[in-house]
Image (cartoon, rainbow, N blue to C red; front, side, top):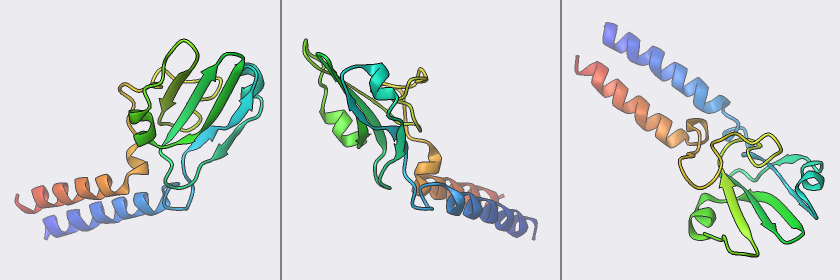
Length: 135
């Protein structure tokens, strides 16, 4: 009985979390989006909510130009652009390509939040439920 009650409470909490996440409400990641001559001018253009499946923010810098946009992790993984003329940086948190970027930007170490991956969250809940029920 305790196991069943614990599983129901856990399931309810996770169900609420998954349904209240921004991705589930049709909102994607927030990224700065702009095209400008320099970073300061670009940042003044602000951020926007990306399409629901967009999971990365990118910043492309070149000689006398900056472009920030919503992107996909797969694009970032395949586009290792960093030559004398252009540089691509990707990050995976809300407004991470803005003026106050955290240290978790770039291609290394930054992973999407669990809230943007309900499938992983549900998988974790199922594993926890199985572990609790086997006690």
